[in-house]
Structures are given as C-alpha cells and as structure tokens.
Length: 499
Image 1 (cartoon, rainbow, N blue to C red):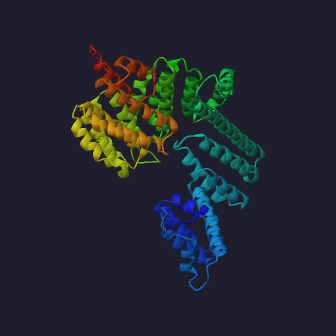
Image 2 (image 1 turned 90 degrees about the horizontal axis):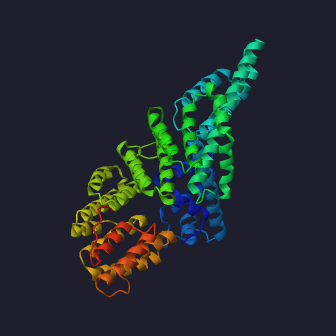
Image 3 (image 1 turned 90 degrees about the vertical axis):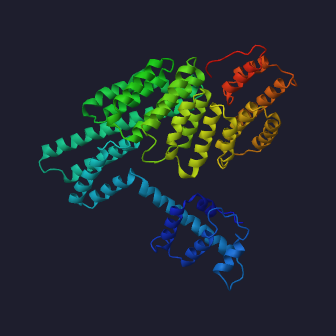
C-alpha cells in the first residue's frame, strides 16, 4: 500500500468531489500534463479505502508506463504533482463556496477597470443579498465593511461632479463604514465571549478576565447607543448581547430567561440558521448550569425543552443539513430514558424518518428497543438491539448499555456477566472513544457486575454502599437505573417515583 499526502486527501473526498477533481485535472487551464490524468484514473480505482494489496507504486507504474522499468522517483513525482493540484482544487472549491471575499474582489476589480455601470449593478445585487438577513454573523458584517470601503473609493473616483454632493455622498459612506466596522467588532467580541464560555471549566480562570472587564466597562452598551439610529441590524446584535449578559453574570438565571424571551420574540425576523444558532447558545448555557450549579434539575429540564423545540419546529433543517442530527436524537432518547418516559420515546420515534438514511434504521431500532425496555418488554428490547449494526461507536456503547440492563432485568446473569467481560475488553481496546468516556462505560459495567454479586450474595459490598458510590459519580451512564436497582436490593426496598 502507498503512503502519500495525495492519498490522504483523496480519502476525504466524497464521490462528487472525486468527479469534480477529475474535471479539474482535465482542464488545460489547471493541468497540462496528460500523464497525471492517467495516474489519477489508476489511483482512483482503489477509492475509497486504498487498502487493496495490489495498491503499490510498482503496480501503478506498470499500468501507466507499460514498457518501462519501474522508476520510484517518477511515480513519486507524479503523486507529488497530483497532491499540489489537489490543494489547488480544494482552494478553488473554497473560493466558490465563500460568500465573503469573491464579491469584494469582484467590485474592486470593476472599480479599477472603471466599469461604472456594471459596478452599480453588482453593488445593488450584493446590497440586496446582505439585506435579506440570511446567515447573520460577523462574516456578513466584515463583508459589509469591505464593500462599504469599495463604495467610498468609488464615490471618490466617480461621484457626482458637484463638490458638495460628492462630499456628502462620501461622508454617508464613511458613516456606513463605521457602523459596519462597529457591528463586526461587537459581534466578534460576543462570539469570542461565547467560545470562552463554552470551553471554560471555571469562570474564575485567567482566560476569562478580559471578557469580564469588557462587560463591566459598558463599552458594548455605549457602542450600541451610538450606532443605533443608523443600524438596521440592531435587533440581531442585541440578541447576541442578551447572551453576552447571561454568560457574564452566570449566577443570575434571570438573564438567561431574558435572552430566551428575546430569541422567541424575534423568531420571524431570523433565518432558520440564526434561530438554530441561538437555540444552541441557550443549550450551551443549560449544559454549563446543570453541571456546575445547584439548579441542575431546572436546567436539565430546560435543556430537554430546547431540544424538543428544535424537533417540533423542525429547526434541524437548515442550509447545512436537511436531516435530523443523530446527536440530538440520541440525547433526547438518553434524557427520556433517565426520566422513564416511554411516551416521549414513542413520540420521538415519529421523527426517525428525518434521520440520515445511512443511520436511520439503526437509530430507529435502538429507539424502539428503549421503548420496549421502558415498557418492561425486555425480550422484545433485546430482539430489537440485535438488529442494530454497530458501525457507529457512540451508538455501540449505548446499545451495549441497554443490552446489559435488559439481561439484568431478566435475571439472565450468566449471559449478563459474559457480555460485561466482553464489553470491558472492547472498551479497553477502543480508539474511537475518549479515555473519560471509556472510564465511564467501564464504571457502569463494574457496578452492574457488583449488583449481580450482591443479588447472588457473593459480593463484598452491600446495596447501600453501591448506591452511595453511584450518587457521588455525577456522569456515570444510566445512573438513575443503577440507583433504583440498589434500592430493590435493600432489606426493605424503597420506592422512588421518578428517576
């Protein structure tokens, strides 16, 4: 097999990109070497895995240079040339997809060529596109800022002949430049603050001091006030600022609800992408609060509520995807599992048709298995679990977890222990999951194993000891179920109404 940067790049291409690269190579504008097209066609035949034992430099060389002796340097130079062309292809694709710089570069060129009529036409088109309020973010404000600079340059060169009118026009454009630049500045400050919030473990860390100082300075509020009379994007920036206020004063939950209220009041003004962004911001806040605050239960419920809003309003359909993301689906199933809410699981199953076709059947079967489990139909749950393909490692751990619980509930302890030992080995060899995730899975398996020993009077721990141990572990999988099983093993079982 061949190790090459070019092969590494090809592995990332989807079928459409692969065909696009072939067209790219066929173009004399980008590539004038026909042998490179031949080399690519041979290499492409091993796509997508490139693991065939015949995939060697020698075999490829024979197919292209049939009458020549093998030359390592010649084939290596060809692969190197294809790698450089693949970089140019990726760059070209990125330029075509980018909505920021191509328009700016185009009207700059039109201005420099004195194509005044065409400049005016393209300028109007760009302005109309910007004013559609789609995909509002700092990139849009940066684009607007750069476009306004080109308008200023245009006014200087081709503005009205009357000196006063020309100066007035220039000053208006200068004001627009300042507003656009301020919008970009505010949105970037808030965006960086959001990223700091999402990735910070402690809000007292030194990395957050600068954001705290900016918040306390009142700088952003002052800028809002100055540009408000001229700013058509004021409502959008104020939404961002609501979140900035909420994360800057994390102990004041009212700030969160003010932000949430503002988001839902402005739904009609926003694109699906923008709504999704704010729902994700609200969700991030809930995740942090439920992990680090005493109000964990409040924000656990709030988090589920937000995910249900995404589901019911079909906000998962946006410019990036037409499918329901598997993580949202799995997260809701996990929450409904902990709440023992089989009706919610049944409701969620209706949305499985929106999942990506490659994962749809497996995720639907896993959801149906969970429904049967919560309905105490453990054998039906096991049958469904056996139909789930385990290509996705994050789904595999959940399937294994539910299978262990089903076997425990049916008192099939021999098979349960066999599976526990098997999954222990699989987890220790798993290179896909993080060490933290693997440790959690192993902890769950060990606790079920101990529960079985207690139930069979073979363990050195009693049920109360295990319950106390479980309660101290905040992130253990199926924590509520484990606690309930401990209660069942007490001399006088305690009934708990909710997980």
